[in-house]
Length: 268
Image (spheres, rainbow, N blue to C red):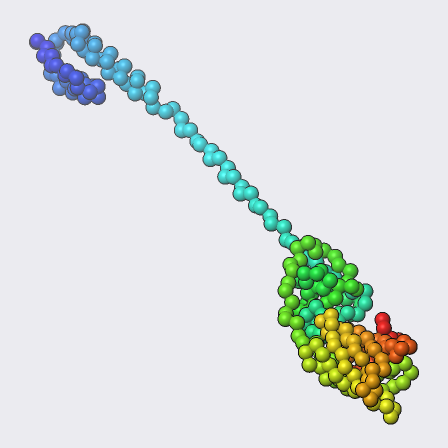
């Protein structure tokens, strides 16, 4: 029987292999017929299919590669340092006011041995703006304050407007060894008043300086200038120390609104 040979041209290798298997299964078997050796086409086709199978097997991976993910980088934390605070430890009792002068109202008294937090300072650097033990903020003279902490970061605050200085009131005074009562009325930076000591009544005129802390003027008896005086108001604003010249010098001090005259009397 004559073997029929077809042409598969450029058919894919898989299709060629399928055709070979189909031809092999469908070819009739003639009993007693001799088996012919494969022809050159079959040999070449079988070689081609075998090579293709070998190439396909070569490109298939023989094992699955497991990839280990790289560890994620830990973010760097930048720490911002907390500014160091400033404190003041008092070596003496110190009044704390609404502003950095005696003419401001009293807010609190910081006691000896008490430590307070510093919030600010005035431009001159001699008063601290603090929080007192009663929870109120006020201005404290820094003379008796031992400061610790970071004062370089303390801001400079502008004090409230300066109130009008005032020596107005009734003062119980000591003029040398003589007791007396002094009544003053202040208008602006000037004041007038009277001093009564025993049967004597004197007229007073004067003016204030240094934010109202200092006062100076003249004493008149029947219109005659008999003495000059100088006073210094103390921290509590209800006491003063001073002196006079008539022409001999003497001491003069007093207290207002129930406050006693300071001791010792005289210019500090």
